[in-house]
View 1 (cartoon, protein in one colour):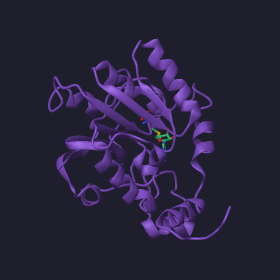
View 2 (view 1 turned 90 degrees about the vertical axis):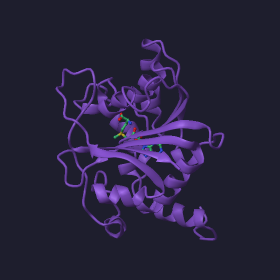
View 3 (view 1 turned 135 degrees about the horizontal axis):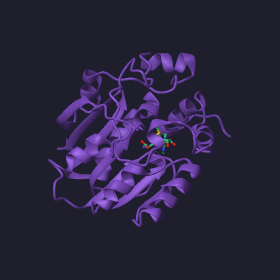
View 4 (view 1 turned 90 degrees about the horizontal axis):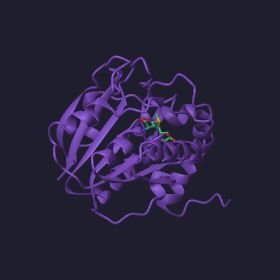
Length: 235
Ligand SMILES: C[S@@+](CC[C@H](N)C(=O)[O-])C[C@H]1O[C@@H](n2cnc3c(N)ncnc32)[C@H](O)[C@@H]1O
Protein backbone atom coordinates (compact mmCIF):
# COMPACT_ATOMS: atom_id res chain seq x y z
CA UNK A 1 0.00 0.00 0.00
CA UNK A 2 1.40 3.42 -0.88
CA UNK A 3 1.11 5.65 2.15
CA UNK A 4 0.69 8.98 0.41
CA UNK A 5 -2.07 11.56 0.63
CA UNK A 6 -2.76 13.12 -2.74
CA UNK A 7 -6.50 13.45 -2.50
CA UNK A 8 -9.36 13.84 -0.06
CA UNK A 9 -10.15 10.13 -0.60
CA UNK A 10 -6.54 9.22 0.38
CA UNK A 11 -7.03 11.22 3.59
CA UNK A 12 -10.26 9.34 4.39
CA UNK A 13 -8.56 6.00 3.75
CA UNK A 14 -5.67 6.96 6.03
CA UNK A 15 -8.12 7.89 8.83
CA UNK A 16 -10.01 4.60 8.26
CA UNK A 17 -6.72 2.79 8.84
CA UNK A 18 -6.47 4.27 12.37
CA UNK A 19 -9.67 2.49 13.37
CA UNK A 20 -10.77 -1.13 13.50
CA UNK A 21 -11.39 -2.74 10.11
CA UNK A 22 -15.16 -3.34 10.40
CA UNK A 23 -15.85 -6.25 8.01
CA UNK A 24 -14.24 -9.01 10.09
CA UNK A 25 -15.80 -7.64 13.26
CA UNK A 26 -19.32 -7.74 11.80
CA UNK A 27 -18.86 -11.12 10.14
CA UNK A 28 -17.81 -12.53 13.49
CA UNK A 29 -20.72 -10.73 15.20
CA UNK A 30 -23.24 -12.49 12.93
CA UNK A 31 -21.55 -15.91 12.97
CA UNK A 32 -23.73 -17.07 15.89
CA UNK A 33 -27.39 -16.37 15.08
CA UNK A 34 -28.57 -17.70 18.47
CA UNK A 35 -26.94 -14.85 20.42
CA UNK A 36 -29.32 -12.79 22.53
CA UNK A 37 -29.08 -9.56 20.53
CA UNK A 38 -32.31 -7.50 20.50
CA UNK A 39 -32.13 -6.63 16.80
CA UNK A 40 -31.59 -10.27 15.77
CA UNK A 41 -35.37 -10.73 16.06
CA UNK A 42 -36.93 -10.60 12.62
CA UNK A 43 -39.29 -7.67 13.17
CA UNK A 44 -39.28 -4.11 11.89
CA UNK A 45 -38.60 -0.94 13.88
CA UNK A 46 -41.69 0.57 15.52
CA UNK A 47 -40.99 3.98 13.97
CA UNK A 48 -40.75 2.54 10.45
CA UNK A 49 -44.07 0.74 10.90
CA UNK A 50 -45.50 3.99 12.29
CA UNK A 51 -44.51 5.93 9.15
CA UNK A 52 -46.67 3.56 7.11
CA UNK A 53 -49.66 4.49 9.30
CA UNK A 54 -48.98 8.18 8.72
CA UNK A 55 -46.63 9.96 6.31
CA UNK A 56 -45.84 6.94 4.11
CA UNK A 57 -49.38 5.54 4.16
CA UNK A 58 -50.31 4.09 0.77
CA UNK A 59 -46.95 4.96 -0.82
CA UNK A 60 -44.80 2.64 -2.86
CA UNK A 61 -41.46 3.39 -4.46
CA UNK A 62 -37.79 2.65 -4.20
CA UNK A 63 -35.97 2.18 -0.89
CA UNK A 64 -32.33 1.93 0.08
CA UNK A 65 -31.32 0.49 3.43
CA UNK A 66 -27.83 1.31 4.74
CA UNK A 67 -26.26 -1.32 7.02
CA UNK A 68 -29.23 -3.67 6.71
CA UNK A 69 -27.75 -6.48 8.85
CA UNK A 70 -29.97 -9.57 8.75
CA UNK A 71 -32.56 -7.62 6.80
CA UNK A 72 -35.56 -7.18 9.11
CA UNK A 73 -36.40 -3.62 7.96
CA UNK A 74 -35.56 -4.24 4.30
CA UNK A 75 -37.93 -7.22 4.33
CA UNK A 76 -40.66 -5.08 5.89
CA UNK A 77 -40.21 -2.38 3.24
CA UNK A 78 -40.46 -5.04 0.51
CA UNK A 79 -43.62 -6.40 2.14
CA UNK A 80 -45.08 -2.88 1.95
CA UNK A 81 -44.53 -3.00 -1.81
CA UNK A 82 -41.25 -1.09 -2.05
CA UNK A 83 -38.46 -2.09 -4.43
CA UNK A 84 -35.59 -2.45 -1.99
CA UNK A 85 -31.81 -2.28 -2.29
CA UNK A 86 -30.21 -3.18 1.05
CA UNK A 87 -26.48 -2.90 1.71
CA UNK A 88 -24.23 -4.31 4.39
CA UNK A 89 -20.52 -4.95 4.45
CA UNK A 90 -20.90 -8.26 6.28
CA UNK A 91 -21.17 -11.32 4.03
CA UNK A 92 -22.62 -13.24 6.99
CA UNK A 93 -25.45 -10.75 7.48
CA UNK A 94 -26.27 -10.65 3.78
CA UNK A 95 -26.43 -14.45 3.72
CA UNK A 96 -28.79 -14.45 6.71
CA UNK A 97 -30.93 -11.64 5.26
CA UNK A 98 -31.20 -13.48 1.93
CA UNK A 99 -32.42 -16.64 3.67
CA UNK A 100 -34.96 -14.63 5.67
CA UNK A 101 -36.35 -12.90 2.59
CA UNK A 102 -36.72 -16.28 0.89
CA UNK A 103 -38.57 -17.69 3.93
CA UNK A 104 -40.95 -14.69 3.84
CA UNK A 105 -41.27 -14.97 0.06
CA UNK A 106 -40.22 -11.37 -0.63
CA UNK A 107 -37.72 -9.97 -3.08
CA UNK A 108 -34.96 -7.70 -1.78
CA UNK A 109 -31.80 -6.78 -3.65
CA UNK A 110 -29.25 -7.47 -0.92
CA UNK A 111 -25.79 -6.07 -1.69
CA UNK A 112 -22.62 -6.99 0.17
CA UNK A 113 -20.55 -3.81 0.09
CA UNK A 114 -19.43 -0.77 1.98
CA UNK A 115 -22.14 1.92 1.81
CA UNK A 116 -19.52 4.35 0.47
CA UNK A 117 -18.70 2.12 -2.49
CA UNK A 118 -22.16 1.34 -3.85
CA UNK A 119 -23.30 2.37 -7.32
CA UNK A 120 -26.82 3.68 -7.87
CA UNK A 121 -28.86 5.92 -10.09
CA UNK A 122 -28.70 9.41 -8.59
CA UNK A 123 -31.92 10.84 -7.15
CA UNK A 124 -33.74 7.55 -7.54
CA UNK A 125 -34.77 6.60 -3.97
CA UNK A 126 -38.01 7.60 -2.25
CA UNK A 127 -36.68 6.56 1.13
CA UNK A 128 -33.27 5.82 2.62
CA UNK A 129 -33.42 3.91 5.90
CA UNK A 130 -30.66 3.38 8.45
CA UNK A 131 -31.21 1.46 11.65
CA UNK A 132 -28.06 1.38 13.72
CA UNK A 133 -25.43 1.86 11.01
CA UNK A 134 -24.78 5.60 11.28
CA UNK A 135 -23.50 5.41 14.88
CA UNK A 136 -20.78 3.03 13.61
CA UNK A 137 -19.67 5.49 10.94
CA UNK A 138 -16.47 7.34 11.90
CA UNK A 139 -16.67 11.16 12.08
CA UNK A 140 -14.37 11.65 9.06
CA UNK A 141 -16.88 9.71 6.91
CA UNK A 142 -19.89 11.77 8.06
CA UNK A 143 -19.66 14.25 5.21
CA UNK A 144 -19.51 11.36 2.72
CA UNK A 145 -22.57 9.88 4.45
CA UNK A 146 -24.57 13.12 4.04
CA UNK A 147 -23.40 13.31 0.43
CA UNK A 148 -24.60 9.77 -0.13
CA UNK A 149 -28.06 10.68 1.18
CA UNK A 150 -28.23 13.81 -0.99
CA UNK A 151 -27.22 11.81 -4.05
CA UNK A 152 -29.43 8.80 -3.41
CA UNK A 153 -32.69 10.56 -2.54
CA UNK A 154 -35.19 12.11 -4.90
CA UNK A 155 -36.03 15.73 -4.02
CA UNK A 156 -38.70 15.34 -1.32
CA UNK A 157 -37.49 11.81 -0.55
CA UNK A 158 -37.36 10.63 3.07
CA UNK A 159 -34.39 9.73 5.22
CA UNK A 160 -35.09 7.88 8.45
CA UNK A 161 -32.61 6.79 11.07
CA UNK A 162 -32.37 5.09 14.41
CA UNK A 163 -29.16 5.64 16.39
CA UNK A 164 -27.75 5.52 19.91
CA UNK A 165 -28.86 8.04 22.50
CA UNK A 166 -25.72 9.49 24.09
CA UNK A 167 -25.03 7.56 27.30
CA UNK A 168 -27.99 5.27 26.65
CA UNK A 169 -28.15 1.77 28.10
CA UNK A 170 -27.35 0.06 24.78
CA UNK A 171 -24.19 2.08 24.18
CA UNK A 172 -23.66 5.50 22.68
CA UNK A 173 -20.38 6.96 23.83
CA UNK A 174 -20.19 10.69 24.54
CA UNK A 175 -16.56 11.10 23.41
CA UNK A 176 -15.84 13.97 21.04
CA UNK A 177 -15.13 13.40 17.37
CA UNK A 178 -11.45 14.23 17.99
CA UNK A 179 -11.26 11.74 20.86
CA UNK A 180 -12.22 8.94 18.44
CA UNK A 181 -8.83 9.40 16.78
CA UNK A 182 -6.88 9.78 20.04
CA UNK A 183 -8.40 6.53 21.27
CA UNK A 184 -8.42 5.00 17.78
CA UNK A 185 -11.87 3.64 18.56
CA UNK A 186 -15.58 4.41 18.20
CA UNK A 187 -16.01 2.81 21.64
CA UNK A 188 -18.76 0.49 20.39
CA UNK A 189 -20.79 3.22 18.72
CA UNK A 190 -21.20 6.98 18.93
CA UNK A 191 -24.01 8.49 20.94
CA UNK A 192 -26.01 11.53 19.84
CA UNK A 193 -28.18 14.20 21.37
CA UNK A 194 -31.27 15.56 19.68
CA UNK A 195 -29.42 18.84 19.02
CA UNK A 196 -26.45 17.03 17.50
CA UNK A 197 -28.71 15.15 15.08
CA UNK A 198 -30.40 18.41 14.15
CA UNK A 199 -27.01 19.96 13.39
CA UNK A 200 -25.71 17.00 11.37
CA UNK A 201 -28.88 16.82 9.24
CA UNK A 202 -29.40 20.61 9.04
CA UNK A 203 -29.67 20.56 5.24
CA UNK A 204 -32.72 18.28 5.43
CA UNK A 205 -36.22 19.22 6.47
CA UNK A 206 -36.84 17.82 9.94
CA UNK A 207 -40.12 15.98 10.31
CA UNK A 208 -39.60 14.24 13.62
CA UNK A 209 -36.89 13.45 16.16
CA UNK A 210 -37.94 11.39 19.16
CA UNK A 211 -36.89 8.50 21.35
CA UNK A 212 -37.88 5.09 20.05
CA UNK A 213 -40.88 3.68 21.86
CA UNK A 214 -40.03 0.85 24.24
CA UNK A 215 -42.19 -2.15 23.37
CA UNK A 216 -42.69 -5.58 24.93
CA UNK A 217 -40.36 -8.31 23.68
CA UNK A 218 -43.42 -10.22 22.51
CA UNK A 219 -44.50 -7.34 20.27
CA UNK A 220 -44.59 -7.67 16.48
CA UNK A 221 -42.31 -4.63 16.23
CA UNK A 222 -38.89 -3.71 17.60
CA UNK A 223 -38.60 -0.81 20.04
CA UNK A 224 -36.06 0.22 22.70
CA UNK A 225 -35.93 3.66 24.28
CA UNK A 226 -32.10 3.83 24.18
CA UNK A 227 -32.31 4.79 20.51
CA UNK A 228 -33.31 7.98 18.75
CA UNK A 229 -35.58 7.73 15.76
CA UNK A 230 -35.58 10.59 13.32
CA UNK A 231 -37.30 11.32 10.03
CA UNK A 232 -36.06 13.94 7.58
CA UNK A 233 -36.89 14.95 4.06
CA UNK A 234 -34.57 16.00 1.25
CA UNK A 235 -35.36 19.61 0.33
C1 LIG B 1 -26.11 -2.47 14.69
S1 LIG B 1 -26.05 -3.32 13.15
C2 LIG B 1 -27.73 -3.03 12.60
C3 LIG B 1 -28.19 -4.01 11.56
C4 LIG B 1 -29.60 -3.79 11.01
N1 LIG B 1 -29.76 -2.45 10.46
C5 LIG B 1 -30.66 -4.03 12.06
O1 LIG B 1 -31.06 -3.06 12.72
O2 LIG B 1 -31.10 -5.17 12.22
C6 LIG B 1 -25.09 -2.22 12.14
C7 LIG B 1 -24.83 -2.78 10.75
O3 LIG B 1 -24.17 -1.79 9.96
C8 LIG B 1 -23.24 -2.45 9.12
N2 LIG B 1 -22.23 -1.47 8.70
C9 LIG B 1 -21.42 -0.72 9.49
N3 LIG B 1 -20.65 0.09 8.74
C10 LIG B 1 -20.98 -0.16 7.45
C11 LIG B 1 -20.52 0.36 6.20
N4 LIG B 1 -19.57 1.30 6.14
N5 LIG B 1 -21.07 -0.14 5.06
C12 LIG B 1 -22.02 -1.10 5.12
N6 LIG B 1 -22.50 -1.62 6.26
C13 LIG B 1 -21.98 -1.16 7.42
C14 LIG B 1 -22.71 -3.60 9.97
O4 LIG B 1 -22.15 -4.63 9.19
C15 LIG B 1 -23.96 -4.02 10.73
O5 LIG B 1 -24.65 -5.06 10.08
